[in-house]
Length: 418
Image (cartoon, rainbow, N blue to C red; front, top):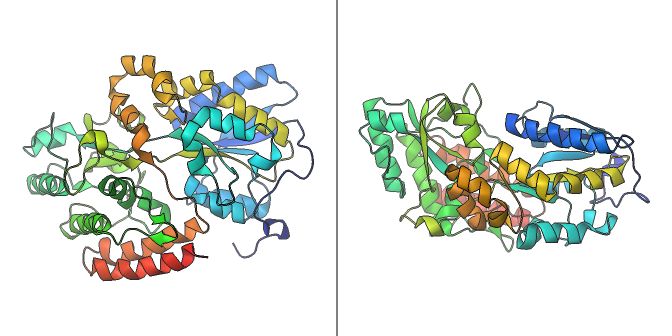
């Protein structure tokens, strides 16, 4: 992006007058299960609101959803709503002037979000105290493992020993030496800053008791817990248990689904990606010392809904948002995608579903221990800075982790302080 339009200089938008009703456009994820949910939800709305039609389509292809949305904000052609807004990108979108300040624009926004999401709502507030995103769904990350590969490697495929970093390294050694799979773990390896949410951050949250990357304007990963996690990943690459090369297919689910990697880190959405492709099991994320499952924190991988300032009919956009997050539609989301709505009553709301789908129980249990990215100014730059250290000493499998990330931490401290 070379330049931002003048309208993007502000940090918020309250709607420019009273919000109006009328047709709106929305984007949803490319995930097939989510598309099915979105299409049925939109169809139900359109049948009842012929003058406020919703036109829905998948997020256009691009390097990342965040890049696509950022470019659309710059061009002034975002849809009204995006049902795939990452909390890590909200501060950047807000800085561009792309997001509507929901707290100021809609009189019932605060009450709606707080009633539906409970205490989780405050974790998504921007530093000014307002909401620029609607909490929507939570995806606690777990460690998936390929039972057939584990058997071939001589490992226990029903109750694998994977609770500590040493356990995973030992399993990886057995997998490599037996040639049961090409790699043990294969997270996205490009320099895209959001990839840290699929390798370092989930394991760091587990190992640190849920400590976010930045707290009180200071980087936290120079702690013992952070160094342990960074050291673990450096060993995985140094020993050839993980690949530093970008995967040619789906870089998030592909390596595990294709049998190239013996293990994969994913949320409950992984089931839809891996069914009929891999015979798998799921365990909590490993930690340095083996934290009990009931106390292991994890990455929430929340995806929220953003209402964008270029939207002409914001009133309809807000009405549709609330409609899409009704108890009925939230239940449909869980049933069709296996992803948990960000509700304060999620355990009660998912009771019947879990009885019929016990696979999801560990994910439901982890929802209260799921942690998102810190909502701080310049968060996108913070993650990019973190990734420079990763590219320098983790992916190559060599170099001084402590010194490198000490410098990275100082840069992030400066960025977080503004």
